[in-house]
Length: 335
Image 1: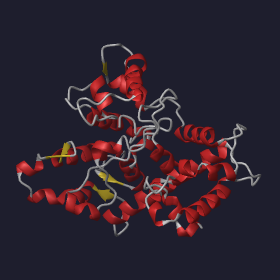
Image 2: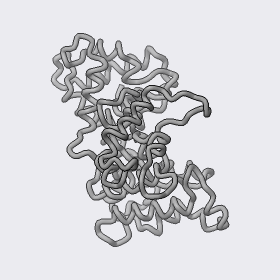
Image 3: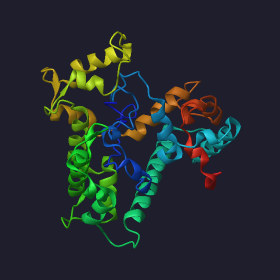
Image 4: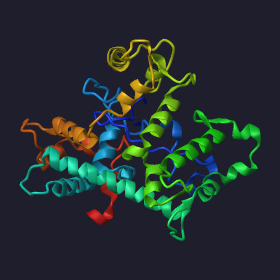
């Protein structure tokens, strides 16, 4: 979300961090994997989609975008004074021209930097894990054995058991399809660039089709190839009980579905309608997030931020101890 119909945006983004998930007891062996059903939502900025229409804000998204996903996990280890001190150092780093103000462009550049750092770190870890000899490529068979070797000893019943909305067999097939999409050379082995596209397809134009397919599969619970309004809403909101009244933001999201998403007004989102939603043309998610953060923290409305304004909006940028986010503040090499 993410990128949950939308863990998808900075005001709206789809940043897919998808891959199959290993057998539960093996998860520590392969930290590069994420639960497939949730990946397309893991980065949703607003739980209602990509536009400024949506007001049901997901603060977790801001924390991860500002700090980097890997930097957002150990906030509870820092007391408020130390985390604020580190946030001040980050603010100084963002202010590239050292004029005492942080502009949208400077904040955009920082967000892009944290995203690149996270992806590079994540890919580097996984590359070393699956390719300890640092060969030019990782063959599919090697990756398959490393991640899914446990399936060799599973029964048919175990292979087809539903885990988080997907079976182990489906996980394998899904990863293989993504692998083939990333394999531009067609040799069934991925070099570092192709492996990066496999793990982080959201940033690669050649992976748009597989991202779209995976997103539809995750939301399309009845597997009819299209998204109903109930599937659309169900991906972002789960009622606690039959008698619970839907929040206003959910009711607004129903209107968004009818008025903006469902172009042909047939009550469903087809593949073309889904693509226009999750893959809008020329959408710059880093700039959208930067504008959002400036808007939220800019007390005097001069369209730029001071360090004081950032510190005053501490929770917006790094969260609180209740959120479990703020890991960038734990990188000792930067402070």
